[in-house]
Image (cartoon, rainbow, N blue to C red; front, side, top):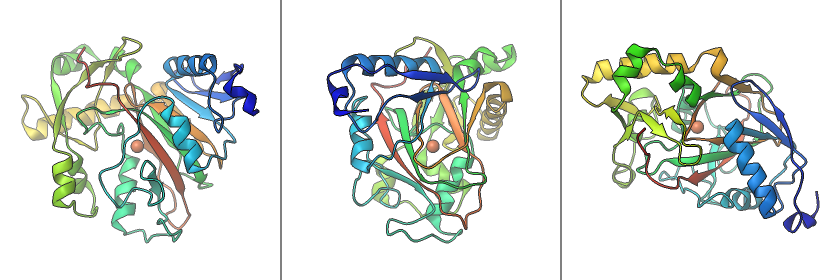
Length: 297
Ligand SMILES: [Fe+2]
């Protein structure tokens, strides 16, 4: 593609990847600002497919940030250990430190990043959770390290009546600090703790663009369900996560270097499959701030 994209609309090539969600988009250079018509077509594809995969996009951090900013303002993570020193809007999904050194498997940062091997949606612990995430695979593993995405509209629609009754009108608590109960992460500083107090979010939400209902849970952050004893609440979240993990709802992304994958955090969850921690894995994420608090449906 050329610089002319700024003024001309580009025809997108869209190839669905799975019946539930996911599409590959080619014919676009993400390093170049999108013409308004191209942006609209891309945004519509995002709403239709929930997860978009852009192969062969060798973006710099600055280009990735500029691409992401076309959709909204970006989050700056509240912990120092995860942020890139060079660009605070970049969340480092990596087992390699900011100086390029492979970290030990027991490093608290690796322990934290490895919690992404459980289903979650990014930033659900914020009063205004993220709209979407854009992840650039810079160094990828040959085996494992796949990212799996699940369509939470479909999970909602498939809920058995008994489960549906338990969650309708209910809220779940999302607490970033819950991560510390799951793995030996770096203890949060007082400032980090105060920056992210626990929040209660509706368990069934309405998407602000599509109007559709989806199940909204984020098992790595959920530590309580309104009106339930803690253990019963955690068991319910586990039961919902199991349903969300059914094959029929999942697209599994196997990474190639310079894939950029963009997903909607308002109607999907994702998880990473295990990989050999002796292999380098470096991914840079830009995270788009949501356009408002979660709306109950
Ligand atoms: Fe994530």
